[in-house]
Length: 297
Image (cartoon, rainbow, N blue to C red; front, top):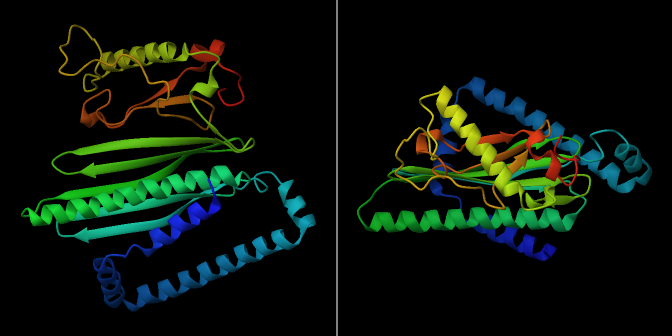
């Protein structure tokens, strides 16, 4: 995607007004704070300024000194600094309407096309969440009131020399709650996005992984009566369609030790109280159909 698209999205996103309630809460907290808290804030502020100056100096030296940049690139874990930061956070706390929307931003990829496309996707996703929440809130107010909430954020699941895996979650609350999670798994060395099909030689991975997951579900239910999955189990009647197989592009990530982890959203394969189930797939189960062992150990 073109850089100007990302810049335009940034400008539009930054132009969205911050709710007045947030300014009130922040100002009130500052006014109510004790002298001790104010002094603490001053000290923290000095530390932040110092750190910012150090980062700025480091970046400047990298930009003006090719020799220094080459030296840094040869230092383990320094030349390939890829990080995930919060680009912006929206907080709305108005009576029965709560929103906490966090927009992640990836920095440090050499492949700027990939970096910009991911960041543009994150901006679009969260702008859509914000716009929809504001529209829903106004509609509910017109109809006499109610309660809605939305919470979005991210978590770095894996960050090593090869893999960066980022989870993005959205929790909607109304009469009930729902949780969805999406993952991006990046090869930091090749600067590419890893997809589930790209890990395997053939489509048989869908059936093989699905059977292993159903086996894990069955074993978990045998050992813990509080765990329930929507599969055929000991003649238990199901009120939902039983889990059959994963999608070809099923949610996944690769964990720190090189295991494939398959993830499901809330209510996808189990009752809501089970949350968002994850299943670690034993490498020996899929070893024969892996393209290679660069990622899956």
